[in-house]
Length: 379
Image 1 (spheres, rainbow, N blue to C red):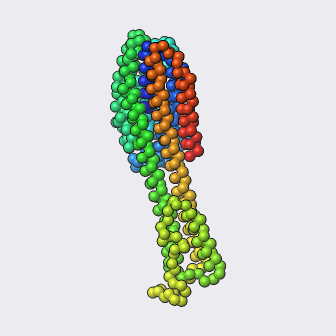
Image 2 (cartoon, rainbow, N blue to C red):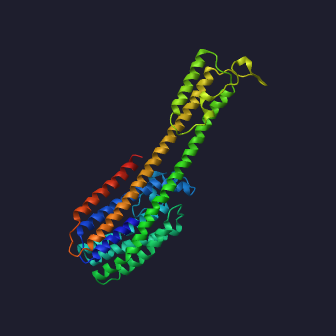
Image 3 (cartoon, rainbow, N blue to C red):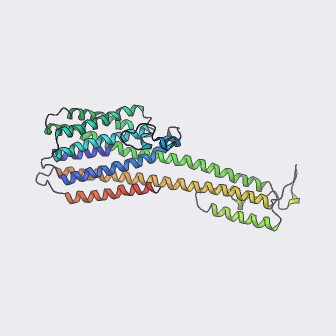
């Protein structure tokens, strides 16, 4: 969202500079913004389950039934997950509004008809209104949706003024007023990254706690069986128990998920050192036989599945964080290159300068966007 506004500002300032429009840089920025928007869509879609959990709804409600599509009519093509979540749909609408705003500025620079330009502005204004309509309905868990709405109120006013312009110069002058709002939007988008990180972490923690509880429930069954029995006596059972202990160490060979020391098989203590030496209220402690150890092996297998799930959650969370970091870097690089473009556009005698640098920056940004796609595609 903020990114689009940033592009809008860059285009506006370029168009308003004394040197005219450095069109190669301007087109590079338009392309860069498309990359930023595509990356934002991926990052927001990845956050949809975490948002659902944060507000106490089931993440599966965002996915089922697939054949019916999103819960809200997706006129703007935000995508199934994003269109189903009011917080994320707000961001999609904001990105669309800024894209229309930016495209209008590009059309001015290329000399297209004023009527076509105003049509683009009208569509951008409709998207801005949708943002304002969505913000009050949004529950905005941990994300600065209100800040986004605050930025789009003034932008909508600017777009409305632009529709009344009678000439291209007045139209451009009006659009130039968007600079402060673009900067506000940039800041809101950057804060989104922080909010999304916290939500993704909380989502992963909840999953890991649930998995750990399931794993411990299986280990507790093993502990109770060992501590309620006498040690095995026949060679088969003794061998099986030794193999079970070795398997346990293999399953829990990594630091996480961590296992309480008293749950480790090598640390368990039988009721007695010999069956006849322990007699409880119900008679002698049962000897741990081969059948009981095989059952324990099955329970350890269940625990191992929990361990696998634990590691998978950690891997997916790592991918989400890596994508967020890439998105944050993409926004930072784009912001910096925008400032460079603004500076170049204000060079009176350098209307074509900086083209190669702009293209190089665009290539870097494309690589950053591609990396985000690859990370989430392989998640």
